[in-house]
Length: 400
Image 1: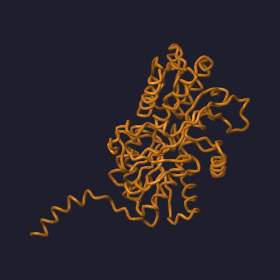
Image 2: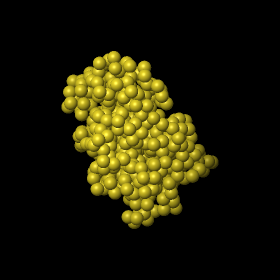
Image 3: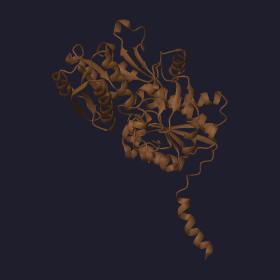
Image 4: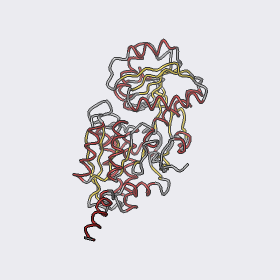
């Protein structure tokens, strides 16, 4: 009778203990992103290549752990992303999931990996809510977020006296957060939003949105979208004759987007990024290795972020000697990470990986010396100025 009573007490306790987290024979990392939709070029198969390069670099530096990279397409659907995450962990023993690229999917995966005590390497989830009200002790957010992109862009615009904005934004989590975070900095610095309009993911005709932006009289037309939607918007803005009269600002623009738009249409556009392949010898070296593996293409900030964050994760797993998500993240926070692509990176208690951010201006065709020579540096913003102060995000993990 006593044994039966003890079992009745212990069984509920056992059900909430962390999943078995001892080091498995092979560390399996899943790259889960958009392989076929509007974010394919920003992340997609290139992020898989980046993760594989990170695993190879880890092995070459004496990592001592067997690593396997697998990949899947979440189709930009939160329910599909969450389902794949669960199946990967339960069926395939996945230790961590990297990339995600879509904010709505990222927030869904964030909860799944917390429940399963595995690590979410949220490399390219844009919403700053991931390290705010939805922060988890199993998640690290690398590369960028909406606060850093909006904050960096607003500071650069105000310095040039471009203080009135009109937003054209995604009608989902990423667009909402981008517009919110950019607006906060803009208004704090004395700027003003003259209007905004939202569009669904996958929009091809931006004529009505651009007409509203044009008639607003705003000095800046801020695009709070990305991928194929942003490409369509910028091309049509050039056709409208909008760009000579108003400054176009891409809040979430990457090098492949500019490449797809073409310098003739994109010239003069301002963008915010965490990485550019031609910044220094280390970024150029990585870009050369990536290009050899990926048809001569230069890495995006997303793909560089996957490389850096997966490498940092593997080193933390080796240090922690476990795949338990909470323990691995604690190891990542122990000391600043000296990363070859992003410089000094500090992982905060709210999960935010802090590093420098950049404002770039798209070159005119006459100034470009090669196929991927697209940017000139406008400003380099130190990480502690670019990212939201930790005590302002509302993360419940942060002690006030």
